[in-house]
Length: 489
View 1 (cartoon, helix red, strand yellow):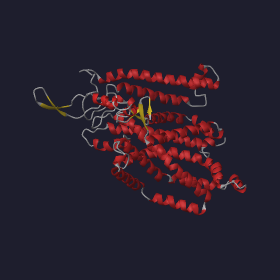
View 2 (cartoon, one colour; view 1 turned 90 degrees about the vertical axis):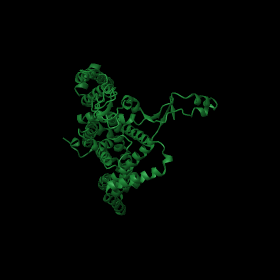
View 3 (cartoon, helix red, strand yellow; view 1 turned 180 degrees about the horizontal axis):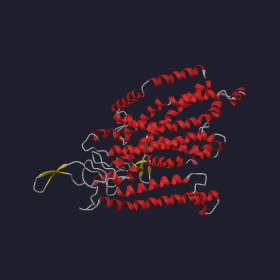
View 4 (cartoon, one colour; view 1 turned 180 degrees about the vertical axis):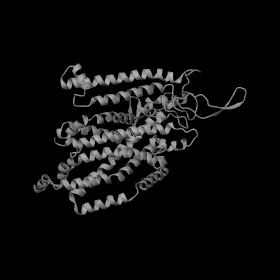
């Protein structure tokens, strides 16, 4: 598909991620029109921790979204022979000859072009101006010496005697100003929205917003977004002249790898849900509602699956996929397509091995719900089993589904790092925190240790998992009908 002279490339995981976003948006639009569904989410908007962590999760999701928009740029220059040949071919055919580059980029790659292209020779520490390791350099007189050579891009603007700390402080000021202006713009945008919603003056809307008297806890959301805006703007300013997070063994930016790894973590945490939910919903509700031999068969199924070590099952599946890819190399000529297929297959295997816990919860809840009076009355009036399940049981177990899915997100993100450590995770060419940690275990054994790759992966993963855990606790309190927030005074 060609749009504005750019060939769009749709990977399988991209399509699934866009579909998941569309389902989430459609659900909230539907919930907003039904008060009994939207009421628990309104309680979530009044939770300070939920709003603060939601800002972090939205930023991660935004990065994953723009990193999932893949395309190929048009070829800018052609040789004279190609131009002559294209004039002898009809227009419909000449347009398809070397019109687009072979390299597939994402929107995030374009935004991070300076980080992607400014590569050094080897390791360099954060904010360093010289290489981390000694290299042999030949002088003008032919003598070879071992020195720490200056970097090609990092700190090249510094002169002898300049203070690096003062330079970093001065260059951070524009980033602080830009981040503050973005925060102010977001504040004014929300205040303008509340002005129309509550039909008050702009000053009153701004005062109510800062005092958190609007019913929605915008203040912690704005504080967290302000910190993110300022940090992002400062890092963007410093990245033009420094390697903020250093470089790895081949000289690539660690900051670029960390940002690219966000998509992999989000994919593992979200796409696995699409695989897990159909199994858990169908089998869990069927086991609890029908009971009898149906319950026995389903219990036998997930008990048998639980008895198989999940790591061995995942390893065998990944090895089978690798054999298939090796035997069908002509079908997957692009490394990106091979890596994407392995990522999708890993999500499928994780989904197949992780649905049993939710299935047990739904079975237990369905056993209780089938004995309720309104379901007994529906059976008495001749309502079919499918209608009872879809109209009465499924809506009453959705709080368990949502809580479990949010709680499992953190475990799935951490699972990717563990699987990559034992080399059965995503493809080695895929940027992921697990691959960064796996390569860092050898770097930490150096003297002195190369610590920044492990630290960057740890920080990015910690922020995502911590925010997801805190947000999941808030979701549990808001949606669980047995929670304290639902207790009657």
